[in-house]
Amino acid sequence: MDREVALIVNPSAGGGRGLRALPGVQQRLGELGVVFSTDATRDLDHARALARDAAEAGRIVVALGGDGLVGCAAGALRHVPGAVLGVLPGGRGNDFARVVGIPLDARAACEVVAHGQPRPVDLGAAGEHAFIGIASLGFDSEANRYANTAPARLGGLVYLYGALRALAHWKPAAFTVDVDGEQVRFSGWSVAAANSKAYGGGMYLAPDARMDDGALDVVLSYATSKAYFLRGLPKVFKGSHVEDPNIRVLRGARVRIEADRPFAVYADGDPIGALPITLHVLPGALDVLLPAGARRA
Image 1 (cartoon, rainbow, N blue to C red):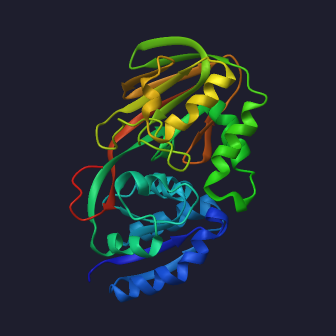
Image 2 (cartoon, rainbow, N blue to C red; image 1 turned 45 degrees about the horizontal axis):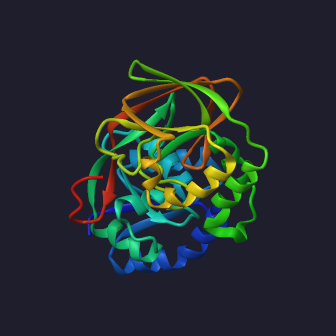
């Protein structure tokens, strides 16, 4: 086995799920003959430094944590030529792993670290802040804020909890969105720029998005009543909500977003900026270990 791995674990991911999975992961990697070291992150800046240093030393960086750690590591590694990222799910959502077919059990996912193939994937970016999943704002800004302070015992339900908390005080916002020169003004719930299909623990917000097409799927959610919104919420878990006439999907490489009031922009579970904001795609920016046989992201 010629792979040398730097295993980076977020001890607080998923309410400690990543840390609890660590002994089994270490045992399984050893059984598979993977040479590895282990470091625990203190915060996102520390995670970026660990990832960058390991990649510059020629090691594969493997993130054991949630989508926040995956996006953070991806953003750091995009600046390192030849860097490769591996993913072991240890968070609450684990949407990147879900979309690309990595097993959601961290121990089982060690097979991908040992035998997976590096494949190029796109990243999204807001200035120097890169993301691997979906950047969103508006109602999503409020839902993410509540979800990030939810009790750890809720597990993956924190995203539903966040949405229900945000719903109580929500009022529609006026958005101006420019996608590769096509401008749309509307009143509604949210705007999302999707590099990947899913966020929020299995919500397929952009079911046709791909991480290898050099574009972002931009999902616009127009104003409806709160009751209508609640009735349609379960459809997001199947991706069938895009058939609703109040949902519009555009596709492009550059997205400019403004609104009539301030919103934080969240991606991979963490804030990455504020409005107005310009998001763009970074085609094939990073090689990620995907299950053997996978040809596309």
